[in-house]
Image (tube, rainbow, N blue to C red; front, side, top):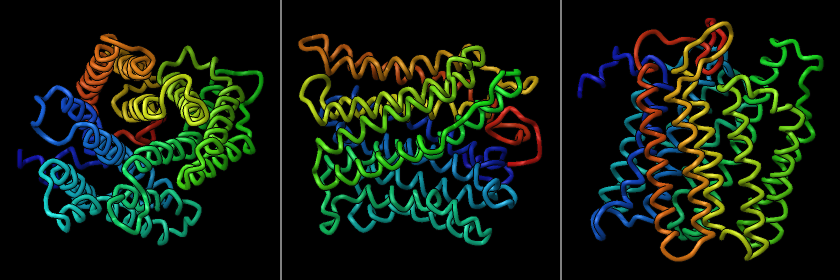
Length: 391
């Protein structure tokens, strides 16, 4: 086991390897908290919410940002030494969440990864003069601050944080994922001789992002009906982007279709959360948020993180049957979780258990398929079907 930490181990050849694997492994393991006997282990509700957002989500975010960094700065790939240090800090945070250390130690283990990741990204952006990337480089600092609601000066309750953090991830998906999905879709449309070029209307994306930012701010001050209305607006605008992308044309390219289905979860999730804040009909807000966490976050993570493990052939990424089932199970788990909030009686716990089992099965299949991306030379660019020398 210790041999894995050697600097020359293939795992550290690129940051997406350890961080995407860690995100998937934690996504697989965390739901087992629900199957432990009562009183054994951490308190399940708060712990699983915290670890899905600040464990699984943070690892996926770090893997993506570190993979994208060379393209931002024009520098070489992130060194194995930096990758190992950040991975160790992430692991320290996971151990800290389980063993419940004294407050000063807990503060260090929880915040260390986010501070180090944000500091490294920010420094690289400043050195390269890529100032337009600074908001993304600062994202880890914001997430690190959001996981410390116990500080008196924060003014936030646990409930507020659990509601705000999924919205912050939705914002990141809207900004980063929107560019990625639009670029990959435009490349696909161009290669297949479409009569009209894809147009990603900037004003739609900007309006969607702005309305979501204002909605988050209103949610922070407790203006839930107004926040809900703006979330619905943002969701509708995200759906409008899909129309301009002509998402239905991607049905013959599964690797791209998965990204568009994940985007549909983003649009639907924002609308569903907004509706739950404005009306008592339908799912409650906590359940609706699972459309963003299990739905948008989960499927977007599968769709993006799985790309390095896909085979490249003629400018396409080939999706294995195993990976297709992984994506389908994660989708179905989100559906089952939302449906559980709409039923009563014995059906509810059965649907909750089904959602957990589908989620676990999906990530187990993902990890089994992703093992191919953990060895051998790193194919660059990491996330696209092209073959070249860029990061």
